[in-house]
Length: 103
Image (cartoon, rainbow, N blue to C red; front, side):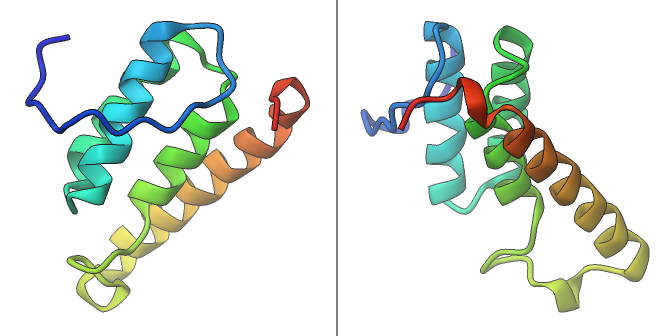
């Protein structure tokens, strides 16, 4: 993986793919560093290798919503509506795929 070194923090998720796990970890670390846009790119890469992984869908929903550096007040109405739809869609996909997940 040719990415900026964000450290070794890992959050194990239910997936059989090491690539999915790796992209999820990098995406989560980007979000922890307040770079949600880059986090979304990584979560989307994780979806390419395991499109049914609930935590990857959760990651997109988490990263696409408001956060400390980009509050709802800073979104335009259309952007806020789009972000809300995207978050809701990925929460629903995460919930739909939880049967295959472990604890």
